[in-house]
Structure formats: C-alpha cells, structure tokens
Image (cartoon, rainbow, N blue to C red; front, side):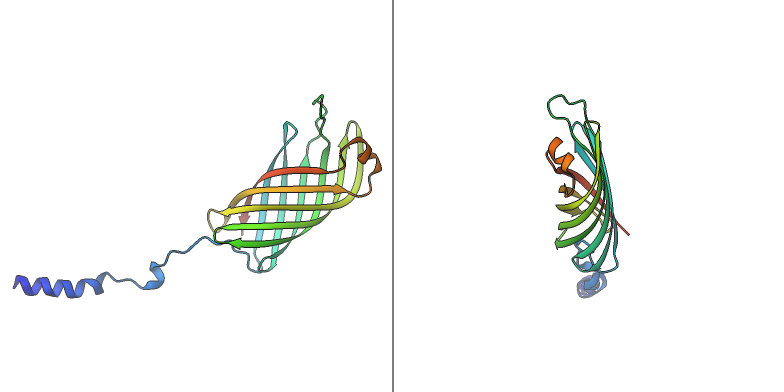
Length: 179
C-alpha cells in the first residue's frame, strides 16, 4: 500500500505544483516610453559651490520620441574670488530622443530656451539653444534615477559674452517619475 501511495504521489505532484508559464517568467524593468506616457523629472545641480535645480515635464508621442518643457535655475555666485559664476533662469522647449536598453534609458534633448542671466551685477535676457544627454536606470515602473550633462548657450547677448564664458555647462543628478 505504501508503494502505491508513493507512486501515486510522484505521478500527481508535478501537476499539482505546476504553474502557468506566464506567471513564472520574470518581468524585466524596461523604461515605458510608449506614446501617451507622462514624466516629471527633478534635477539637483551642483553649481559653483552652490546648488541649482531643474524641473521638466515630458510627454511621449511615439516610442522613443517626446516633447518636454524644462525649467532650470542656477544661482549666481559672486563670492568666489578666482572664478565667479553666472546665474541662470531658463525656460526651455525640448525634443527628447530616447533609446531604452533593458533597464537603462539613454537620451538626448535638443531645445530652444528663453533665459535670464546674471553676472557681476549685470543681467541680460536672451534666447538660445540647449543640448543635453543623459542616462537613467529604472528602479520601478514609476521611478528612474540617473545623471545628465547639459549645455545652454545664449545667442543674442553681447554683454554676456564679454563678461562671462558665454555658455552654461552643468551636470545634474536626475530623478524621473512616470505617471
């Protein structure tokens, strides 16, 4: 009787513990860049012994293509004796190109800015171009964290070119929230 029970248990066990294959496959964390996805990015920007910040809203229209509105603030620092830093307040419209690779999202952003610059008690308002590239790592479906490198250049600011280096370069720690 024990042998029959043992054989019966061995025959039935694989069927009683088997699961549907759809539930067994692990779901990788891919960046959701399909159309209609909304993202908000927050940035912390170390800048000239101070901290700036950025905020961007991004709307995907096609997989890998999004339009964004971005705001950046970099504080002016006149206290540095050797290299004072110019301040920047910028509002940008950008086209962002994304390339997701597994849990990474590599992107480039090309944009047009309206900016207000301050440097050594001089201020100027100008328009110009911006370029950024970065990479993010997906930690969940709603959260990604990474780094971004950006360049902002004023086009029509003669005074600013003579008193500063003529462009803003910064690196930022970025967090992206998807909803």
